[in-house]
Amino acid sequence: MAMRIALLILALATPVVYGAQHVVGGSQGWSQTTDYATWTAAQTFAVGDTLLFTYDSTHQVDEVNQADYNSCSSSNAIKNYNGGSTTITLTTAGPMYFICPTSGHCAQGMKLSITVVAANGTTPSGSPTAPTGTPPSTVAASPPPPPKSGVASISCNMNNLMFGFLLVFVTMFAYMG
Ligand SMILES: [Cu+2]
Picture 1 (tube, helix red, strand yellow):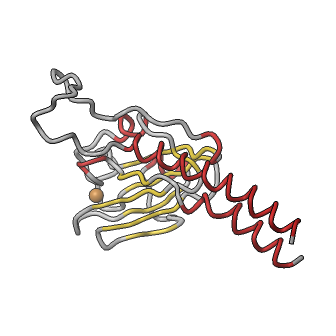
Picture 2 (picture 1 turned 90 degrees about the vertical axis):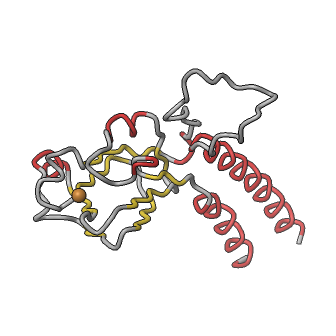
């Protein structure tokens, strides 16, 4: 009985591990030069996904509440991250707010507000930066473009589907055994 429950919990929890990774700001990373409202609009953030902040030593990442996001205040930061590479797993649905605590940076636009949706609500996001003037061709002479986040979302959904089937099989075996 305990074994059966353990398998069930494992099967239910596993898809969360396979969430999409969102590289904050795309190739620009976490800096003052990125328009995060535009970047965010092209993404779907789901529970189980991760945010990856990459930045140089002049920046940090503070998770803050909505009021502090609006006023660019880092004095009540919920969490502070530094070191140049920060991965944050999205664990609950709802809004999240991040700012850079370096003086002046938030006011220059280094602030990120996202809305996390439940894991089942994932839809593949459109490619954030579609190249213009080069329509897709089957006889491409140039190397293919780097994978977009939308691709990651699709493979993530495939994984969820696979684990759904696994769950069914595990349950069947548990009842037969
Ligand atoms: Cu900064």
